[in-house]
Image 1 (cartoon, rainbow, N blue to C red):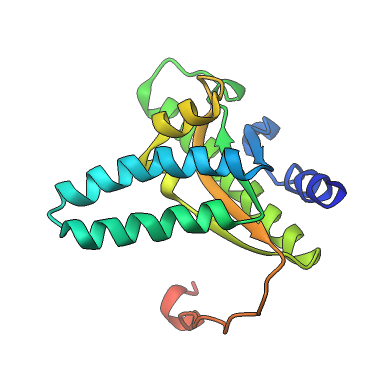
Image 2 (cartoon, rainbow, N blue to C red; image 1 turned 30 degrees about the horizontal axis):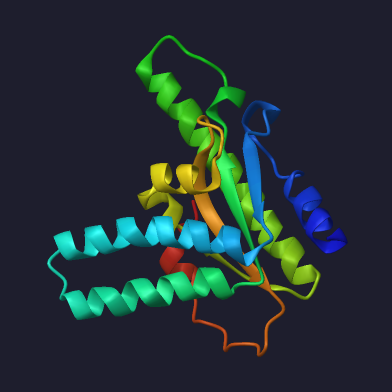
Length: 177
């Protein structure tokens, strides 16, 4: 538990818009809590894939693989945005920007969390699936209504170090002015 607390502490040092620190973390320590969120998201995922016209047998395999990843992860942390922590504006343009700044702040905290986990010898992956099923996620964990699920971080000590995935060259993703 000390490792988890150190990782979370590091994440809270992420920069945030207006220093509002809008991140909230639901730490899924038990397989039961991970199974609940996996089942909830899996139901929405299955519905969406079938609506996309994918073959039922492909959908079944895809959803089962997704559920298995979540349930078998030794630890999962759900990163959420609490928009109440942000500023209120009378116009939609600035309110939208405020919401985006909150989302960015949560993503920065998630990135720091993954780096802190790596420093502790853990492997980790950010899963965006909660964005596609926020109500199901919220209900499965009985989260506060204002918490907006952003990403699910799956963590554990790796059995093996996978090969590094290629990255685009700097020249393809950057412009220098």
